[in-house]
Length: 274
Image (cartoon, rainbow, N blue to C red; front, top):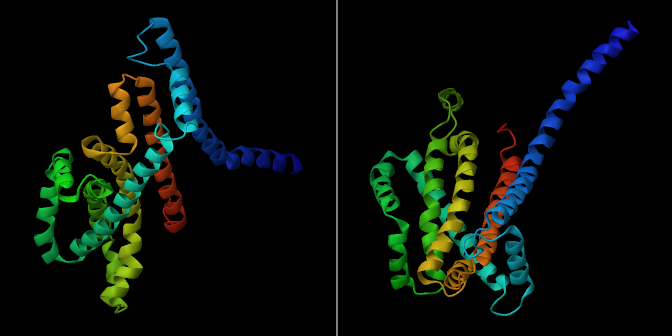
């Protein structure tokens, strides 16, 4: 009997440890793949002897990144990074507020859908690079035009996911609330909004990446400060290593924002297994 219990317990241990092992393996994939990409990149550039003006080595990119972070004054990355981050956060915040308000209104009101949705789709269909010069004419060369473009780009995924989430509530839950004679406001608060939260957080992750793209595009058009301006200046100098270094900063900015949203989702939407 004792032997069989030991055998059973031994069989249970791997099964219990399996989810933790899988999570650990999944976390290791990214750093391992990153190291392989960097090593392969360095070897490929040195073996093929490609012109460093066209494709820099990872070592030169890291050196450019370090110089930009270590320097002070106009050549430093820091003031440009904070300017771009400010544009991203303000545009993202504005887009989230507008997307949630309009999405919630359209989801609960057929009249609002008939009036608002066609205009939103029409605005979204217009290429944002064509709107960027208009923002400069209307709002000037300052941060306002960049934030406005970021708002236009980010609100749409929030809007769409809010509408989809609020309309995805199972019919039996709504029927239960009706049988309990719950009012519309209570139904929205207890049933519709919780059901929509996983959709909304998915939209937030998309919008965060869009906000970074919008900020850089607007800086290309009319920037005086920001990482987009540094990219243009480095391109004019054919300093491709600096361009790659700035792209790394932008990638880290996007990853950081999406990770923060993911952490918030796990705490707020704790019942969602995804």
